[in-house]
Image (tube, rainbow, N blue to C red):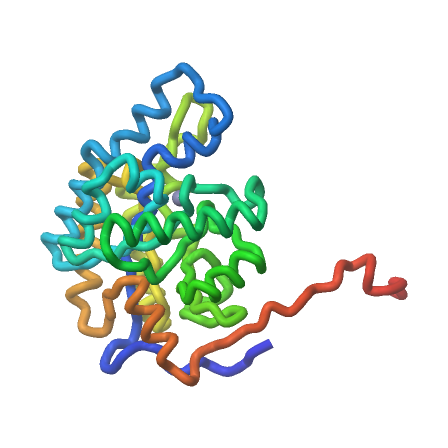
Length: 290
Ligand SMILES: [Zn+2]
């Protein structure tokens, strides 16, 4: 239990931070889901191709227009299938970071397979861009102690967990926290009839604007996460442009990439650090005397 307010973690004179992050999943989750045999159907795969054909370019043009650099988390297989993707993002000054090789879901991936995928993804980024990526985001935001150890071994920061409003260090790894409530998938993802109907863009715009304003007042980090194939439509890009143009115009807000935020946290000596203490299951705690 911590009763004290943490010191302002942002570079003076900034009092809050915001980051525009994009998980460039494209076809990867569909390919992972059907990794043993691909179905002979077109709807979902065409839907997901929208990002690489139209949505991502519209989103990047918007960021360039308002002078905001985004953080793009790219499964290596997406970069493999779209060879101009990583070089094009780097050329425009955006950040690229790891997001699995095949968007491997943690519950379906052994420790050994994770290690292999991480190493192969790093090698692939180096081969395509000439530079080692500095950060990682887990597919679907699940993590394990093994994954944290591997990130530490490769000196990578992480952006997958939600243990604080502010960047923190967990088991020696810099964590730039995410939030489900400012992720486009839970509001807009709709793949087939029967899925929960998507929310209307103006409704989400109002909610995210309120979240951003409260986060800025509280001195926190507004970490938005969107996807190439979900938020690249015109109304959603317009909504994101208005939101981030306003954040970028606020002198109190540091609009930065995930990597800049991670590096700033790593340089501090007064940031929050947590250890990954083992928990004890209830039945192993001894007899219950209540
Ligand atoms: Zn993803």
